[in-house]
Length: 256
Image (cartoon, rainbow, N blue to C red; front, side):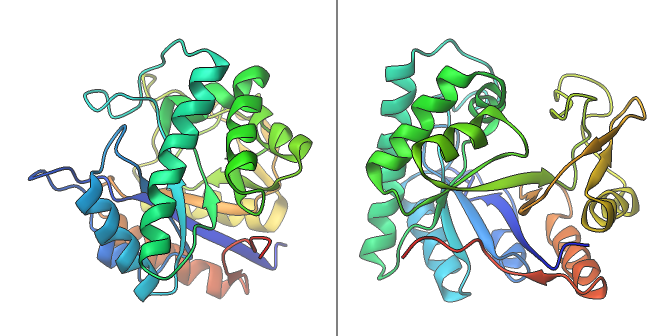
C-alpha cells in the first residue's frame, strides 16, 4: 500500500474570452497544478491568474509545455526535431517560471502535455531532449512522466528527480501506455470505476489494461484532467478516497 501520493491536475487552459475548467474549485483538493504555457492553451493573463490561485492554496506549480497547436489543444502528433523540442520546452518553462518568481514563489515541476507527453513516453530521443531542457533550466525541478516511460528514464539519466505519473480517468494498454483518445474507451467517465482504478493502484501497485492484462505500476503522482466535466467533484471524491485509505496527499519534493 502506498503511504503518500501527489494529486495533480492539468489547468489554466482558458484562453482570452474562452473559459475552460473549474480551476479554483479543483485547487481545493489537489497538491500540484500543471499550468498551460500558451502553446496548447492558456495565455499570459490566465497563466498569472492560475499561478496566483495555486500559491494562495499552497499548491505546487508546474509548467505544462506542449506542441504549438492551439487549434488541436496540443493533442495532435507532430514531427519535431530534438533541438526544436528542447527549445519549445525551455521557452514555455521559462515563461511560467517568470510568473512564479514575480509572484514570490517558485516553479516545482514540469509535465509535458498531450501529444508531446505521449510521444516522449515511447521516443527515447525526444524524451532526452525534454529532460535536457528541464535540467538546463533548473536541475532542481521534478519531471513528471508516464510511469515506466522513456521520459522518466531520460529524466533519471540526466539527474533529475522524476515522478511516475498514473491516471485516474484514462484506460491503459497492455504495454503500460495510455489508450489513445482516438479509440473507444480511452476515458473513464464513470466516477466509481475511476476511483476503483486508483484504489487498485494504491493497494496493489497495478492497473488492469483494457484487454484484462494486469500491468505493474509504481505511482508517485495521480493525474486528473481539469477540462473534464465535474472535475471538481472528481477531485473531491478522489481526495476523500485517498484519506480513507490512509494515503497522505502531498507534492513531490523539489530539490531546494
